[in-house]
Image: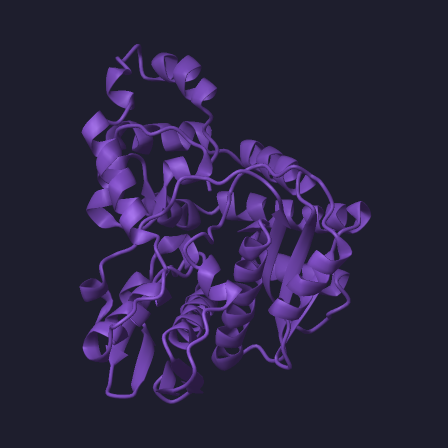
Length: 369
């Protein structure tokens, strides 16, 4: 995500814009209030008592949509049956520049699947997901079970990709063990690094990937198209990357689109990445047993369990996937991890830090088939 500090914007924007007034740079009070109210109503995940049938299915879908997705594209569609929910890719929301083979898209489906699994159990249903390779969707069969609201379900409403600085304090051994268990399975390996030399080695590849991406006009254009520069834009689309969620100022769309090219630089982004990684307690790398769509869904489920467990412990996390999104860098990064010929799927930093403003989600009707 781009770096444009409030100080940079206030000091430098009048110069590069020829003295244009910045009074419109702040979103209106009404727009900000509207955003806050919508964010508050979006991020809730309490057990709904007395809800059944179609209403219960809609509630499970709503909980599933609180999962993360690449650029917050919310690239999923849900089809509700009598005893099952099918999660399908929404290819109209794919990101071909950053994700040409739909890797992140299917990881996102896995994240939504795990939220659905946790929400179903909390509401008295056992969810059994399976991947249909022919139709390329996730089929989640639902059968009655004893209701159990786990700490992971309770964390759904608080989980976020926290794109800010952390406090740099190491985690306790038992906390790392819980994260390791949550993010691992027989189909997904989780590699945790907490020693500074290993994190610095990883940083070299993260910077290489980031530099390559920012030299690609298609990547920059695609990223820019998903940025929401102010509360009005965020509320209108209810998707994408709202600037406040990354610590950037809220500014008018026309100004953000012009300023983006001036302030979004490889050097600025690399400096921010280095600072944020060095403020983290550790780095997590998820690796599926096989590089195919079924395993990418599994990786998404493993990551979401990791993220929910981290949230339950008061630990933040955010993606640093740049070395995986550039094929030439990905192979070097894999070799450095001792995984030659394999494909690492996700890179995630973690640690304790403050919360950031919430991203939004589209209404349930918008994601139903």
